[in-house]
Amino acid sequence: MTVNFPLIGEHLALDLLNTRPADGDLIAEPEGLAGWLAEEVGRLGPVGGGVGEAEVVAVVAVREAARAALAAVRGGGRPPVGALRVLNSALAGAPAHRELTWSAGSGLAADRRRPAADPAARLAAELAEAVTDLLTGPRVGEVRECEGAECVLLFLPAHPRRRWCVAGACGNRARVARYYARRRA
Image (cartoon, rainbow, N blue to C red; front, top):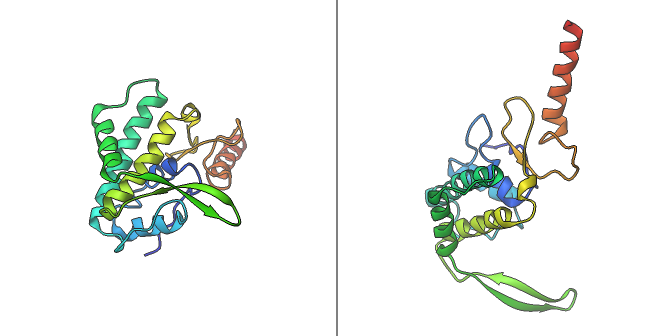
């Protein structure tokens, strides 16, 4: 089963939230989550032992908590206590530390290292860290929902006039709808 993820390459937390578009949940099954993780290669650590139900449950819990927290923060409110509890639990599930490494080509770098942990907890912690970065970052107020009809995808606009998640999809549908509305009038 090949899943088409509609919007990849935004902030990692938004990519996670966009796995639940208006027409279903793209990561509700291990195959869908494995496909999404393959799309996010290089942004997340590997899942040891493959993707199973435990990873799906952990990732979906982080996603739903992130959705509730982001909606509250975007609206100027306090995130729900339950959402914060889920995110904090995920963050505590796989502690990390930084480790300095040296590479002849790039010099000194500080890499985040994780001790061996349950793969589902480690994956949930990485995603919860991305959500935390978004929620506490300076651009959280800039997160927009696509203006396309029935589209619920979120994005951070690179340009202040960006209105659609993907101009070639939602943007084209909006332009075509305006064209036909003018023709009927």
